[in-house]
Length: 118
Image 1 (spheres, rainbow, N blue to C red):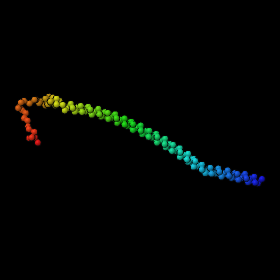
Image 2: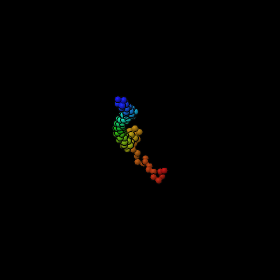
Image 3: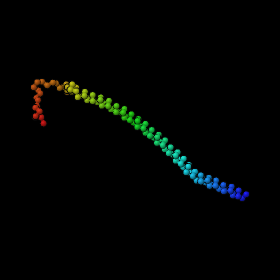
């Protein structure tokens, strides 16, 4: 009978050693689970951040395209205005109306040869 008790006691010890070993590695399993969860969360946060960043850049690009189109249109209108201002008809009209100039009579204009102009 004492052998049976000893055998049972040794069986209990063997089970308790296995349980102790499992509990000893349990912290590693829990850290691995937590680490995996942190990595998944970090990956998700990175994905959301990248998606948000891409959207922001797309909106900024669209704003710049609109601004460029407005500036191109303004440039066209300014070039047209420059052409109108440089028009010889306009210059002649301003000279006659605002400045009171008239067309010169014969003999009032003297041409200088190009070789004398410095």
